[in-house]
Image (cartoon, rainbow over all chains, first blue to last red; front, side, top):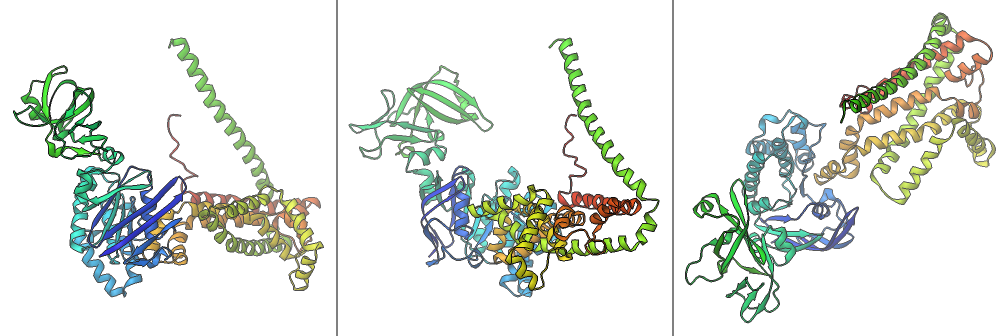
Length: 343
Length: 279
């Protein structure tokens, strides 16, 4: 069942412009909109919540047109990046703020006790928001919206102001909340890993337009255009063309067995971690090159191979230590056909 | 850098810092000396002056008019200040610009403008027939205080509302509260300090309002005689002890309300510790 539908929505607000956004979120989905900062993701979320009216287009909730419905009548839960807890109220009053509008006080109190138990914030009820840590504030902000049993939970970069440890814990918490409450969540972020770990469905937003939507797997493994591919952090995107049953980037880089047959393709892409060192006899897409650069990272080593185009290879430290490689070394490598993608 | 350069730079830095400090000290001496003189002259006869019918009348009238005009300012400044803090349109720009005019005008000119509007036009005569007579009356003092102070109060209230995040209001809306409820439950409490500061400084300015009130309400002893008008009247007739008493009261009220304003306004402007740096 479609919970939320955004149809052809455009809006210009200050420096932000979003263009012709179309989006459908089904019940129970964890939908992540991924995009660089400043692309208008928050504006889209605020339009859905009813804080701004779109210049063009409609917003539907359970097939009902809510484009002009005031925010207070939409029953959507909104959590901002900086949580926006009301600083003049205790944690308890913050959580009960919306609940008092929806339920009789005794019910609201019951619901609150259950929620604070689940979220582990029972000991904070009498504290004021400014005395809480980032993680605690986030849990309170979640309790404040979950208690009204929202039709959809709208999360605006909810993890981006946390330190890496709390971030990981709260990421799992969000996953747990999604399963436990069977909520539909629309979450926006610029963090690729956050999207990878949470999303069932993903939309990639670039320059105010939704460049690609689909299941997380579809989008991450098959970006449908160059912008999406480079935003998703695919290190090897090499221009070329389809010639006589091969995909040819230059004389050195010819992929003899492309898995698709399409004359209109103009880029081949593959992840640096999918490139394998060495060439077994009979394996396809084998190449020979020269190491042009080596860079050591905490968890892996990046090789750069000069093939006319730079080909990036990511190795684990163990793999790297097995091969005596220096700059200028000759190297054989192959790329499994299943790792190749074309745009 | 040679040691000669470094000596030269240290000398310039020292001279620059001392220059800034010296200017500050000079001004502090000027202000405290002049104000202290008024208080020193006022104190000996302060007690007897406070018992004079004229000063008692001036105190009562000042308090009465300033409280009413401040209340009227609040009534206007809160909705207008909020509107200006939230709406960014050509109309709000127009309102903002027009509001700046009385701020820039000398109060005595505002008084003349009010006198012309309420004293010479049919509009003024009609109001007078309905009992709203402003020329040479106590109501005129209130109107003059209101007219001069309301733009100032709007500016302060505007700043207070601007400091409340619209996102905070958005969250309240999404939790089921309409705009008015959100304003009452979230915006007003969060802007409370700024609004209190605005009320106090407006009240203090209303107490001291002279130019516009003089023009519109006149300076009639024991009729439209507020504290500043009493100071003016007694200075002109040579009643120095009464004049100094009125001045002393005004100084005390101004200084106290300034301190309260600063303490409420930003919570930090009086004792700003954020500026330390390398000095």
